[in-house]
Picture (cartoon, helix red, strand yellow):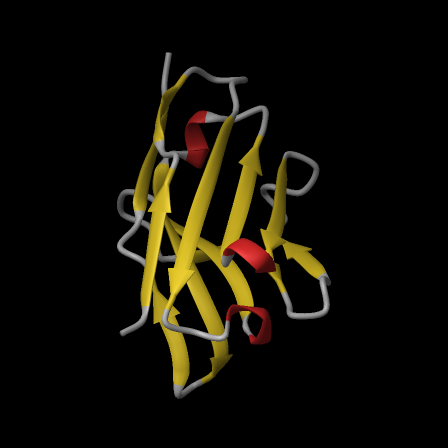
Length: 116
C-alpha cells in the first residue's frame, strides 16, 4: 500500500521559516519525481516545487529564491525548506509522487499558516 505522510506544517509569523517533510512507503522512491503542491483558501491547487529522479529542480514563480526542495532517496523522504514566508503562502501543502498517470500518489496534506 502506498503512503505519503507529510509533516512540519504549523503557524509562523511573516518572515519566518518552516521545513516540510514527506515520507513515502510502498513505492520505488528513487524512480519517482517528487513534487510539492499547495492549495490556499478559495484557490486552485498549484505546483510549488518539483524534483525529478535525476535531481533537477523546478519552482513556482511565487516561491523562487525562498523555497528549496530536496530529497533523501535512502530515507524515502522529500523536503521543502520554506524561508521568508509570506501571508500568501498560507495553504494546505501536499506531497506528490509521480511516475506516470498510473503511478501518481498524494499525501493527505499539512497546513501552513503565515500570520502575525
